Length: 134
Ligand SMILES: CC(C)(COP(=O)(O)OP(=O)(O)OC[C@H]1O[C@@H](n2cnc3c(N)ncnc32)[C@H](O)[C@@H]1OP(=O)(O)O)[C@@H](O)C(=O)NCCC(=O)NCCS
Image (cartoon, rainbow, N blue to C red; front, side, top):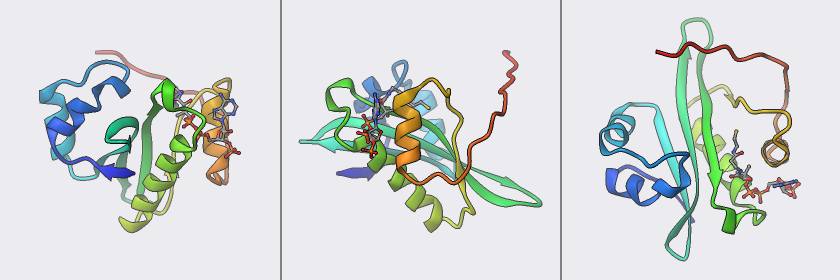
């Protein structure tokens, strides 16, 4: 079962699925932002996987969904949960009027590449990501 999480306690309950433990303040800020979405997959009531999405709007392009992070607990991998989460976020993006969705990942991340390809991505590019740390 995939649910859209809208309260901080449910974010904290799914905290083990993130790279680092969720913090109350950041979880609350995330949920308060319009266009920020967290979907959690539950197996027998336990959080088994999550995907986050952020809507981005540009004046000449409209709104697209950034698939920000995707993670499935190791014990629950290879059961279709990752694919189901990506499909669910794509469905939400369509509902919200987004013209598309994109994700950044590493080509050598076979599991991620296969998961994204299995959901019918239409284009791949070789962009380089540059970042600034503050
Ligand atoms: C990537 C990840 C979310 C996939 O989750 P998952 O629930 O195991 O994926 P699914 O079971 O839905 O698999 C989806 C597809 O990918 C394939 N796949 C998944 N893991 C794979 C692996 N390790 N090697 C090869 N193919 C793999 C599946 O066979 C399936 O393909 P199919 O639909 O053609 O049969 C999971 O491996 C994970 O959490 N990895 C660590 C975090 C990460 O890398 N996230 C992405 C960062 S951008």
